[in-house]
Length: 102
Image 1 (cartoon, rainbow, N blue to C red):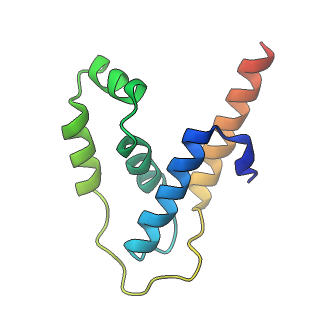
Image 2 (image 1 turned 90 degrees about the vertical axis):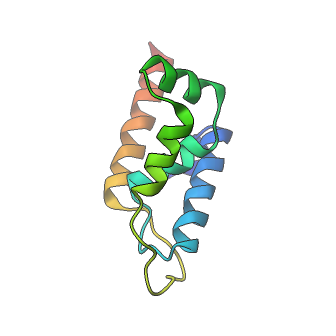
Image 3 (image 1 turned 120 degrees about the vertical axis):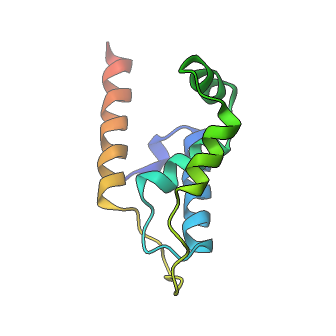
């Protein structure tokens, strides 16, 4: 995956997801870990969208964090991105590219 194609904010969220996964000793970065990282940024857009959907952003972040699995027993040296999250990244990039060309 070519992360340089992501926006700066997304790259920061990916970096936070790696740090969170390593800190909690996960074997990989799942979509849930990535979602926690994205919402922790607390951007105006994320907060607005959550409020628009009827969710309290602070409570939503709390629920996401609470739903993370318990930390693992051994921290892997390099935390890989899960296949599922690679698929999500690929689809997001495809949508971004197709929306730019439309």
